[in-house]
Length: 498
Image 1 (cartoon, rainbow, N blue to C red):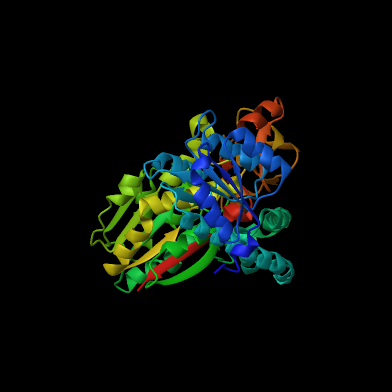
Image 2: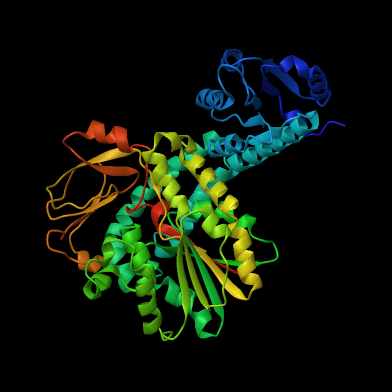
């Protein structure tokens, strides 16, 4: 019996240089209510796409002339909204990983069984039903957005609503939501510029107080805590990760904001130090320049909070294998920094061979999700909880994909960085950004030659006005952080326990 969902699928394009071998498969699929057009080459496939619309494309990886991944990218440029299922062999693991990164919808494993295709068709049909429903609900999302106040909690609620809603939307609806997110970021930047010093003074949750308020109480009660901090990971990426956690665990989430600049040297140092950057600098000049002293800062933070005798583990995990081989000890506090997601994002921008990992925000989010699944983080969380730990998962900051340059002037005193720069001579010439002059009010040190701070807003990156086109060519599409945006500043602290 034909499924009602299947009837929603109008056309499938099956691309395979040996398509004549699948006549019986085609007959079976047609008996299931599916219309299937075929193409035996890349040229035929692109011609078919130019002539008519399809709901699903089956694409064989091993084709002569143009390989499946190259054709995949051509199809995505022509019809970015159409889901593609790659037809591969089980041995094509590298191909599957790259396809995941470039947003393949699913896989058909050879030898091809028509039932596999029917299952994928049903998934596509279910997705279309969900997207139509989400499209209708989008108006309600915008109505809800308009009711949320411009307050600390209101902006965190807006961030979660906007960033999570876009995950399940169609291409067209996602563009509408992205426009709303961009508009919200403009308002958020203005609100932060007016209110950030007050928020700090009134004690809202930021990077520098999140451990003392939400993790240290477990230790003071005699419990055990383990923290997995994923460097450079966004709130919406955590929404992909949470469903991978074991269903028999209890999960709680507290949203909070990264301090500014929303960059590792400031936000993560402040998190472990338990104080704002200006206090870190006052005690340890130069320590904000890198993250080589986090363990010492954490030790000082514990002592100040009455936990000075506590033994703890602090370790950076730079590869999959570091996490997979991780042995959880009995020490009451264990902190693990997961660096390999951020490392891969930056390598992607710097090395041409890794640019295939993604050319859009969504591709990078899928790739980050894939990295965490492959690293078996969810299994480590379950293992820790089974050993009596409360597990906490968070990030030090999120990220944005750079879209356009903001032109600046300045001399040799300016610090490096594409989303923020310190320097007395910093001047914003064109486009967006906020200049901070009272650094102490923003919890930042005032260092000779660096009494001013320029923070990028929206999706811009800072470049000198001498040769902006050259800089734009190099940095556009890169993954950056340090500025003011909901994607960089809104973070979840996830608590996992039995």
